[in-house]
Length: 121
Image 1 (cartoon, rainbow, N blue to C red):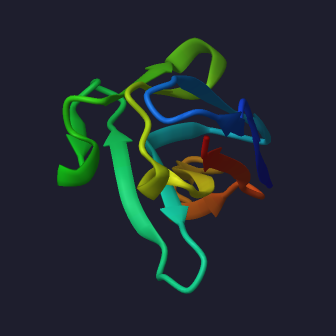
Image 2: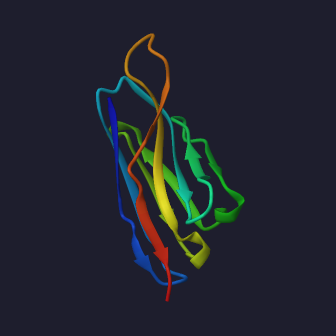
């Protein structure tokens, strides 16, 4: 099994910054793409950013230029640096990882428990 543990959420004023972290642990053969998704009240979960094991990144249009995703492959950890935060960024942020538990086993998606980010004055 793979466990994803997020940290770094909280309350911040508009224009402020936060850094989210997510560490994968457990029986892991390999982690491929990692990413962040978010879900605001009454809305569907949406992609924020993803990063491959080769450090290729993809961002939602709403966060381009403000958020930066990065990862440490040796630690199976992914980060999300969020700058110039807006009230509309308020949501529960979920870490996601695509991984394989062993050679020949299928890739599976794993999710963290979520961390609340609230942007408000």
